[in-house]
Image (cartoon, rainbow, N blue to C red; front, top):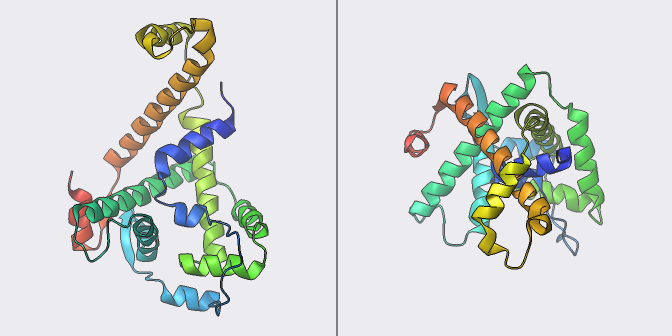
Length: 245
C-alpha cells in the first residue's frame, strides 16, 4: 500500500482541481507585495457576502466562498469573464458549485465518523504558509486580496485535513492492486513500453493502477453522497446552472 501522503495527494488531484486553491494555496511572491493599507479582519468580513448561497443537507455555504473561488478561477482563465456570458463561464460556475457541495458533503461525513481535524491543525498550516513570506504583512495582504481572514483560512484548511482523513482512512484504505491485474495491464499496454520487460515497469504500472482504483473508489463514494444529498441553491441563475446535467 502507498503511504497516506500519496493518498492525500490523490484527494487533492481528484477533488479540488484547483477550484478551491484560492483558500488552500497562497503563492509566496519572489518580491514583497506592494505596500498597501491592509484591511482589518472586520473590514474583510464586512466586504464578504455572507448570505446563504447553498444549503447542503441543511448546512449553509456562504456566497463569499463561491465568489472568491470563481474570481480566482477567472483570474487564471483570461478566456472567460463575468461579462462575457460565455459557456466557459457557466462551466466554471458549475465546477465551483460542484466542489463546494462535494467539500461540504465530505466534511459532514468526516464529522459523522469522528475524523475531524481541530482548528489548531489549520492554524499550524497557516503559520507554515505565513513563514514563507518575507514579512507577515505580505501574508496578511495576500489573504486580504483572496478575500478572507487568517481565521477563515485556518478553518478551511482544517476542513481539508478532515476530508483527507476520511479519504485516507475510510474510502481508499482497503484499495489494493493484485499482481495479476498489473500483469494484465502490462499485456494490454505493452506497446507503450518498447524493450521493457514486465519486471522493468511493474512498479510503475502498480502505481498507475492503484491511483486509478483509488480515484474510482473516491468518485463512487462521492456520487453516492450526492445522490442522497439535499442540495439547495438560493440564486435562481446558479441553481439552473447547477441542475443542468
